[in-house]
Image (cartoon, rainbow, N blue to C red; front, top):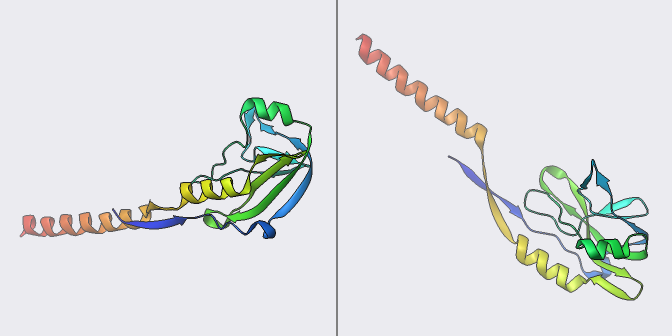
Amino acid sequence: MFYFSYPVRPDIPDFSDLRIAEGVFTFPKHGGRPSRYPLGVNGVFYACSLGPIGGASDCFDNNTREAVRGDFGRVYWYTQKGKFGVKYRVALQIVVGHQKLKDYSMQQKTLTETYNLEIPVMLSLASFLMATVVVYTYLRHRYKKFNS
């Protein structure tokens, strides 16, 4: 099988370069399940981290989510490029009142440690074509020997 490495490293900007969104916190659901963006502020949604295959983790545990639902807060965020050109809005610091629920330095450390890796991705089409050529060549050679 053929593999190549797909780098999964967050491009985390400096704190001063983060965008800021302020508004009422919501937690959307799609079909009864949590959505890909588990935190909403004024109708715009944010993830708190991104997995290697693009899934977003929840920003808060259930108790904290219910405690801050409908509260006015501030989200410091940036845009992270994902695989295949997809862009995600990732929250790095979340503040409600004067309380930091997510801290920039801890989020930066967590994202960097968790996703500073390279994932081997199989080139299935190339593998399939190579296997087809090998099998075809083998069978053709064997057929010629048999009929000679």
